Image (cartoon, rainbow, N blue to C red; front, side, top):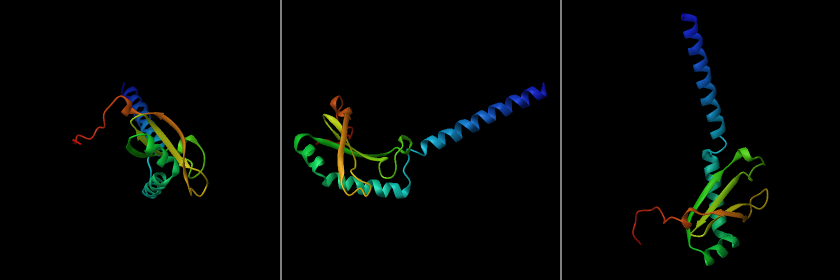
Length: 125
C-alpha cells in the first residue's frame, strides 16, 4: 500500500513538473525581454512615421497601437516582432521590411474588436 501511494505521488510530481516546465518554455516565445521591449518601442515609433500608417490614419479612426512577439512561428530576427494598429474597422499588422528594420510596412490586416465594442477606457470624451 505504501509503495502504491509513493508511486502515485511520484507520477503526480513528474506530471506537474513537466506541465510547468513546458508552459514556461512555450510562454518564453511570447514574452519580450527588457531588450526586446526597447526594440518593440522603437518599432512603434517607426510604424507611426511610416507612409502606410499615415494612409490608415487619414481613412480610419486609430484607437490603439500594440506590440507582439512570436518566436515560435519561425524566422529570424527581427521578423518575429510585430506592431498592431487597431482601428474601429480592422487591425493592421506592421512588421520590418528588411533585416535592418529601416522601415515598417503594413503586412496585412485582421478583425478588430472595436467593430463590435467601444474603446475600453472609462473616460468621457
